[in-house]
Length: 346
Ligand SMILES: Cc1cc2nc3c(=O)[nH]c(=O)nc-3n(C[C@H](O)[C@H](O)[C@H](O)COP(=O)(O)OP(=O)(O)OC[C@H]3O[C@@H](n4cnc5c(N)ncnc54)[C@H](O)[C@@H]3O)c2cc1C
Image 1 (cartoon, rainbow, N blue to C red):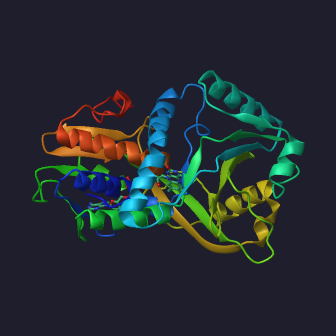
Image 2 (cartoon, helix red, strand yellow):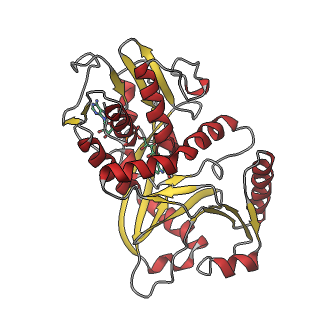
Image 3 (cartoon, protein in one colour):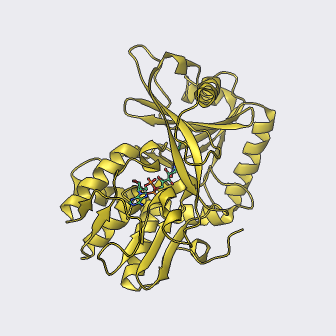
């Protein structure tokens, strides 16, 4: 249950393997998956000591190109995948130090990351601010247009025979099904005691290019400005700028302060941002766990959990779908024990 990126990916995968699938959701594809930025970026998201998320994220990232190609063919629609890579920029000397740590950590793990000096950066990405001190180019980190992805997943589900029931489920024993997959994002917590997720709010902006605007960067740009993380993810018609992160219960109202900070930080990185049309500002709720790893696996003979994907649900969708199908079929899971829903969470 739940028609976000996780529930739809699992439903499509299970239907393709011959299962009869019904997805219950009163508001399909309008949760966190609709709001998200679309980075598929376990490498630039990584940091020494955070090997668990890196391992899980890269295992899913490797599946993305094949997943996207199969999805696009099944749906007859683009998957939204973009393969241009990611640039992490340093705005001040502290950020430049952080970039060196990240570069060293990725190199130790055999991941490609190339330092780009100030002069080379302005040659490659002339629209970025001249005040940027340097950058790290990580070609392996990709992105996806989340809304194109959701449209493709829904179309692929329909053509695989998945049925949609536009209803909220308040009791996991209510659906007449042999197996229930709980993939209700932040709504999961109310439905099973092991679905230990809490909402972390994120605000995000969608900007549309106007005639005469300097060409936007071709790849994802992320940076830290005054200690706040900001990213700019290219779309066919503009940019997505994200994202704030704080705890505010289930509130999804966009705050003036959130929009102000996002615009200010984006402008520090990309001065021409002020020229764009502000298309929309939205807030979504990330389903976070206490250790920043998802909860994927069987919790009883009739229930499989697929939730708690926090900041990385789009990235982790292909791996989660494979894991859910393996669990349904009684096969070994392709996810590390770190995603076990029964693990101790602090
Ligand atoms: C601002 C922001 C930026 C983000 N950026 C990225 C990013 O760049 N990359 C990335 O990988 N991830 C990103 N994320 C995280 C990502 O969006 C989530 O991890 C992912 O969307 C979770 O997917 P989901 O399917 O579990 O949840 P959702 O998309 O929230 O879907 C859950 C669905 O369950 C349904 N539901 C809830 N309760 C019930 C119920 N009782 N009965 C039936 N249905 C129910 C809801 O209606 C909803 O449709 C971002 C999130 C936010 C908020």
